[in-house]
Structure formats: C-alpha cells, structure tokens
Image (cartoon, rainbow, N blue to C red):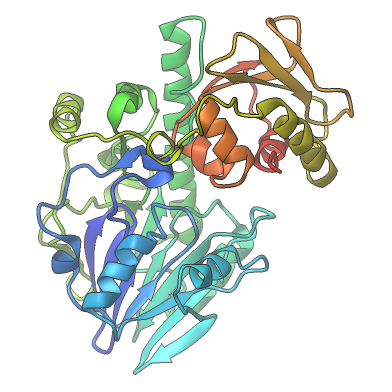
Length: 422
C-alpha cells in the first residue's frame, strides 16, 4: 500500500486493487471566500491527482467537500465512484444529491481484496464527520479527518485493523475556527496567550489520538489553509501550529512524519519509508508575500449581494423571527445575551439565547453579561439569517468580529447561533 499526500485533507491511497482519492478541496475561497491554499500545487489539481477508482468524501465542510472541483474531476474521470459514510442526519448525502451527485453510501465493502470501511463519529449530535480505514493484507491506513475523539469509534477502528493497530494514521493536529483571531482582547498579550493555549490544546488532541490508536506511524493531517484578502492580517493570530510542530511532541514525535507539499510525496507501507519529507515550518513572511501577490476579488457576500435601490435591509424583524425559531429549536442551557452589531448601524440588536424576552435596540451593551457581541456586515447578516449561508461557515471563515464577556466558550450558545435563521 502507498499513500500520496496532495494537500490538506486530500490524499490518494493506492493498493494492488484500488486507488482511493480522499477529500479533494482545490477551489479557492472555502468558507465564504476567505480560505486559500498555501503552498499552491503549481499544476492543475486534476493533473496532479490523476485517475482514481473511488472518491471518499468525509463530511460537509467546504475544505473536504468541494463540489466545484469534484464536478471538474468527474468530467475528466467519470468512472470514479463517489462514496460517503452512513450518518443519522445525512447532511452530506442530501447536499450532494442537491448538487447533482449520486454518492454510494458505504459502511464496509471489498474491492478485489482491499477492504474499505467508513466509521461515523458520534462525538457530536450533528453526527457529520466520518473516519476511513483501508486495509489490504496485514496493512491498514486510517484517515481521521476532523473527527473529535470518540473512543467507541477508535475501538471499532482498531478492531478492524488486521494487527490491532494502524500502520499509518492520518490525524487532526489543528483547529480552524474563529478564535482567537476574530476576538477582541484588552491587549496583544492576552490574544497571544489565547493563541498559544489553542495551539497546545490541538497538539494535545494529536498526542491523545496517537495514544489511543497506537499507530506504527502517524501524520498530521487536514485543516491546512490560510486566510486571504484583508483577513490575511489575522493569520499570525490563529493559534494554528505548522504540521512540523508534531515532530517535537513527547511520546509521538518520533513516530510522526510530515510529507512534503507539492502532490508527489509518497509513503510506502511496504518499506515504511517516504520519498519526500518536510521538517521545517513555513515562513510567515513568505506566506504574507504570496497572499499579497495573488488577485483578490472580494469575499463571496461582497460579490453575491446586490441591494435593490436605496431600500434598507429589514434586519430587525428578521432577527426577531430568527431568535424565536432558535430558542424553540436549540435554546442554550443558561441565558446569554447575543448582541448583533450591523456594520452600518451605531446600535446593537440584542436577543437572549434562553430567556423569552423582547428584542431590544441599544447603543451600549457593556452592562450585559454574559454576552457575545457579533460585529458583522449587514449584507452578510442578511444572507446568513436567510440561510443562504450558514453561521458555521461564516464563523469558520473569520468573517465577523466578536467580543465575549466573560471569555468563555459555550457550545450550547454557539449552537443557538447556528439555528439563528428564518
């Protein structure tokens, strides 16, 4: 078996009987137009990847499911079969059907002696991510994508490995998200400390995965992107470790490898060797210079939203309807004030994530705690309230700024926001 690294979560897995392409994302501008690739491949991705038999898409996030590239690839290689995993909500499957694809839902299957199994991740009620295990003979490659740690899933994966452990495990090592780069802090020291905590947290996840899966070799994987356009100034504050950071981790650095970028780095499981490795982090100045050198045509909402004349956007009644829906579907366990600040207004639109209180308009929210201020462009707010975009996509794209008092992450409050639409 061989694994070839293309970019981020995109690899090809080749056995004597089948070639599998995983999560090809190559359309610039995932998550609302803000996510770009670095370093670029240098050649068209379809040419770099070449023909494959199966295309595995792990979940619906736009750096894993790229319908524009997928359509382009299938035009070149129409015999490739798209496969997805089973899930309760079928978010990816339904989206792909709407986009004109006909994925095959696979629990497990056999392709001429190569066994493929897809395991759903149950760490979240949304049940949207999956993991892939490919085995041939005594060898096994496990692809964990963006999965959060689910020990039942890990136990099932190890049971599916012929030797009880993967020969190579592709593991998450960083978290995208908007924190801390889009959050406002009292000073730079607090922001830098938040970035350091985030980096340590996700490298800790990588270490924990290595401990639980106990692979012969491990590789940091997925979540590789940079912010483009005006948001590029935030890249240095994201708390995103370079993949090479795992090489110095206690207990797992010695068994970790980082395949080089460019689309031609291969790890051979027969010899347990790679032809091209990367051991040094990328230079932030080189990344900034590259981003300045490429054209930027605006974020998606800036290009897609066209107001009619001088008619104002009816934001307030939309927020009022949306808050009622969100509270009925996904209220938070404790009340938080959600303070929306449209870019063209001096006032906040204030709602509550749990208590059924009237919407109010105010020019100051400093007396409200706990609160989450969301400073957002009117056009983007309109498109998100109408579900043209989803809050998770907008948040992940770092497309709005936040103030949080106290600075405490609450998953239930974020879930309320994700349902804030009409």
